[in-house]
Length: 125
Picture 1 (cartoon, rainbow, N blue to C red):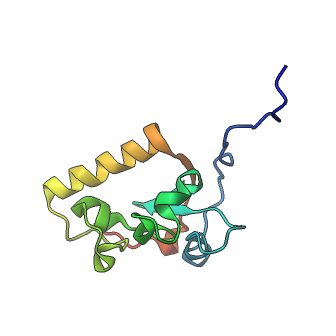
Picture 2 (cartoon, rainbow, N blue to C red):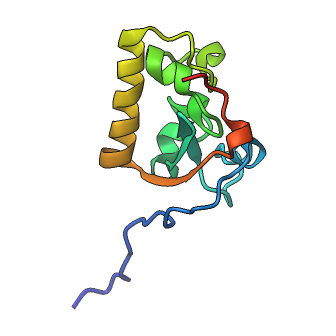
């Protein structure tokens, strides 16, 4: 018999039907330990809280936290100026890379939490 308490694995919240605003997304950047950490790609919001060492303050990918960083994902960039939602300047190859990131986040790593409100989306595609 184990003397250690049972620890439940991390379970992200169930996907929500109601969209969130950019304001709320910006508060989910890991600077407040009581809030989740969210990353958005193409208006789809992913819960990356379980990888807070990467996406939280000081983490390698904190640049993506609390925002839609679609352009940066498409360009495979860690530059602050690329961490924006507008990916209309991406070329065909970069658009494929962007779609690959959406697939990766959706199917492999993170749960889809919700979508950004329509007025919050800043893409032309």
